[in-house]
Image (cartoon, rainbow, N blue to C red; front, side, top):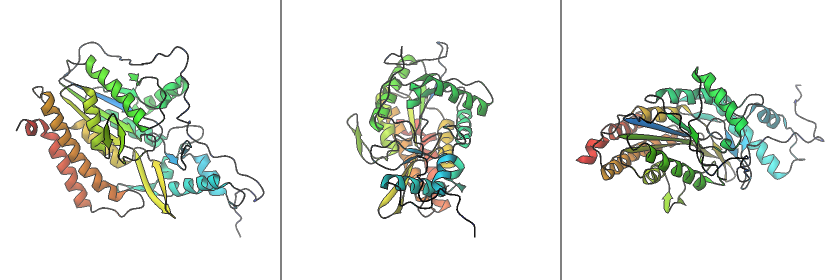
Length: 362
């Protein structure tokens, strides 16, 4: 008989690693309230693209397993420890749940367009980002028209050493030198609303500094603290969908000719006994495709006024939300949707996006 490689029942397994606790942040010395940095000259092109990047839950997989706890990091070490536990009787309840959740998520199929499981996204060694997901970010960056402004919105911005390492990793996958163009303001964030408010503050400043640009395209890659869009309030708005978040960003931009897209890197599925896996599930193939489609959409025309820009962007967001709703049928743990229906809704999304200015003026 083959014996398990797990620890004896009398031994306690090593603790599973978690992502940095997000509610207890300390600003490094010398940092002001804002860190808006731009490495560009003063002549803005006709269209500007700004990408707000989160890290945890986007470039790695973070697993929520309890209120008030930092997400568990899906890395090879955590997966190995969780798989090797034979006797869970010595574990505390929260430790047992954590181990079971890591194994469950690692063994779950990623989605409709991928045959692998989330174990494929696991971080290797001491790295806190997945090589696979870093490569997918590089694909998105290459899809942008010209060179996009890339703004670090993650709490990683508080740690300069981690930022430098992240820039090196992105450079390696791009094949060229990469540096962030700026960060959102250096303020403590304890939840999804705090994150959106920091992004909105930065976007308002960005649009104010680039009023010469006829069109500003805003892409947000974020799991929003492993938080579902369940109707929570931010800035007086109830946020129940990606389209609601996009409408919030348009309002904060305070400028005509702005279009916004949220790629919400969040998944949840039932794992039994009323328990749900809530996961910052990274840049899946479907999310990469959605981000690339947004970045490649035809730019709005310069004669759009504020009202028509908002109407057009809302129409585009609505089309994308329809597509996202159908895509949820293919989330892990749920039946796959019919490919024809999904492609049809994607076509509707593209139709709204490519004709947004004409529709707004009609």
